[in-house]
Length: 110
Ligand SMILES: [Zn+2]
Image 1 (cartoon, helix red, strand yellow):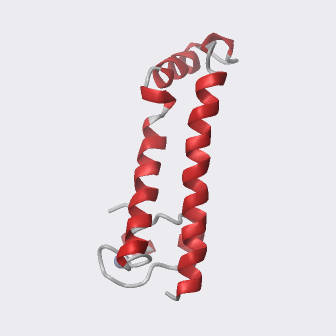
Image 2: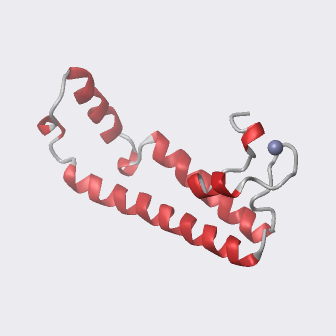
């Protein structure tokens, strides 16, 4: 992959990281009254359990943040865009959809 494309994906990753971090901050203000949420009891329980997590960060947000940081590390290491299973280049359309993908289409989910 050429440097121009890597720079493009790096920018995408940094944007995603920023979005998640901004989300955490705004959520910790907006979720002051979790009972104001529309929906049934299950939804309310979900809001309560996620609000109790440290700094308002949900498990999926934590995981995504971790994935993004690992991808940024791979850019530094020069291994970005390479499938961790077979070592071939990850499809560009896949990286457009998921810039932190570390496996090609064939090996995703492994
Ligand atoms: Zn592969």
